[in-house]
Image (cartoon, rainbow, N blue to C red):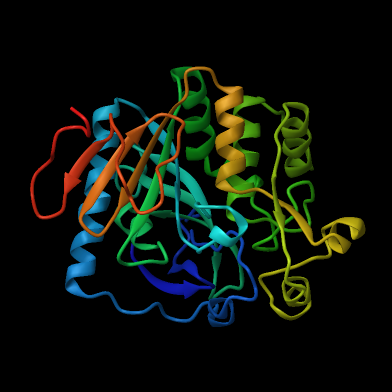
Length: 321
């Protein structure tokens, strides 16, 4: 599938023909960031060295997926810089070995900048990795599932009718996780999990049914506490941020309950015994792979047991080995 990346807020958007299904997105942004005002503008050009590093990083992730023996993985990247909100990852999707696009393409929701509405797109894994905000660094996390959950999610994700039934009509980066008025990329993933694992019947309100199932199963959205009132004001000014789906008392407290990759991770860890987590980082001198639920430290620093790949050389033994 042919696509041309364009800047969407501080994350990546796609100008592409939706495959009936295809994808780009901002999944929450601090409106005070200057990058928010460049929504859908072309991204800065990458140098040859930056492209090489990011392609090597994508190849590392793909190699781990190939070795996993899995049919799919939930995947998230660090796109927007959300550290001020305590979030490393901003954008999630589903990487599918049997993708009709190319193996391990990521099926995801993006804001289509040309159409001005959310779409579903398939994006090759290298393009997904290149969608990070920092061309000199990167973080990717995978969540691998046992056969039963993976099979149900694969069937739902590859069924265009099911996947599109859960696609909202209006996009909001900070969409309220308990409202169907808007949708962001992570909310679509969460609702697809509900459709797949809850075996929800067809109805005329599939998103509301999915959200109800998530609440019954203890799904907890990420609470973003905002200290700058410009973020709330931005909901009145910027077409990709909204506040009218959030409760009035929450707005007064500057609190936004939003689906984020952290919400999905916590739900998967609690809901799916046997799920696995693999995290990757790209630093100035090395790439690091960690298995387990303890996040990597800032600065891409390895700990004992991590796999370290120095840049410019072949794979190195695990740290501390």
